[in-house]
Length: 298
Image (cartoon, rainbow, N blue to C red; front, side, top):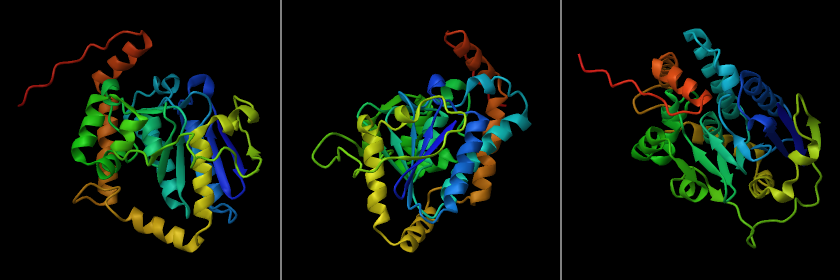
């Protein structure tokens, strides 16, 4: 589910389920959280890159698994599994760079936003499709998106569910750069060959995952990792801690704990609502969902 390899001091995590567009199930989320915890204990790692195999970064939650989620406990558990990944990323003493060489939808877009930095190829896109599926973000994304892009832009992005191109995402500050083949983009990886660490439940070959010469965002993200490694590890870790204490996670006036509790409760309630069940059925049968009318004020 997660392919792990190293380019020198840069660890690369590849979501490795291309047959299902790297859809996120509980096992994948748990494997990613475990990979982050493992990297935290490795002093040779100075930066990490998260990417996806194939044409997608991630198409979001795995509907084959999520169709069976019918209780508040199960919905809360899925929310917690994704949130644990974001917490594991936050706990790392080095940055996580998201390399978007394909589309990120729903939970995939949330996962990208949880990284410290994001770089995208020109053809990549982000889509926060939650409202169209009758759910709300589940992994700290609501406040994170508002902190990065501003409240009004966050509202538009979340409520419309429109696809956001790489250039649009750059203008919204959702990504930090659009990679290209210009003079500042390296066409090699300093002669380094990736060293595979593990390929649990891999659905692709090591070669296809790491054909980096064809993956502009991944190649540039690794170069950023090299640049980060030139700095003091202590200074980098301190900077990351200080940035995390800014207005990233909690909503204004909320503590981290209350912001998380509010978001989790909203996700669970939305997941159990009839609108979500209808959206899932419509998706499965390739039809437009029939929306329930807005409840009158009482």
